[in-house]
Length: 97
Length: 139
Image (cartoon, rainbow over all chains, first blue to last red; front, side, top):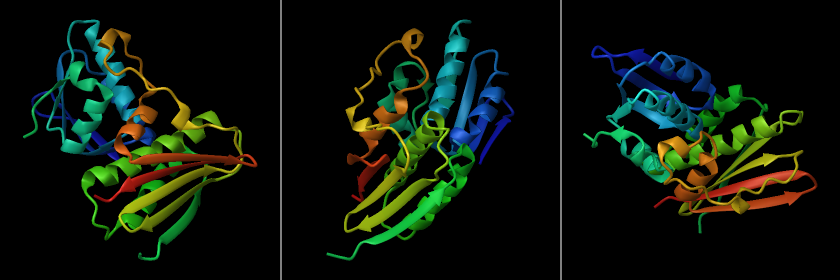
């Protein structure tokens, strides 16, 4: 199960598991993002390639307006997945806490 | 060498099966000395295979078979489609992950990532049974 909510400072907070069964829900939420935005992954336990696809699609849409997503509080195993995906060069990822 | 422990389960061919697939994996791995990266690698890879079978062989009426085996020092997980055309992910070429954002397209990452996070992937095809086996070492 994946929960996605707006944080107090305009960040988008992810909690739970971002698997293929949550793809449509997550895409629909991120389609509301119009400017530069931080995604907080502190309570994100898991992301699959379906989730990576949603992030990439959103980043491409925002890049057309010259802005992008910033990923914060990324756990080590999810960070490894971003590394193997080549996402470190196309997303701003804050250093691990 | 310790005796292997095996569990076999079947799941309806639907994305809606995923929560029960993950639950089965977690139950099976409970009690194993295994780091978070290894658990993640197994869930990630099984989801990738399972969703590929749902997406690319939707007309089949057979359930998808998940087999989990614990051995000394490793876990082996097989995902079998009992009625399918061959689909050998070990033969898929690597994708380029160093392209700039404008040239990146969603999709194609899953198999690439499985090869990165697993220790070995085997494939067998016989009598329309398409079986992919994932091996992850515990240390």
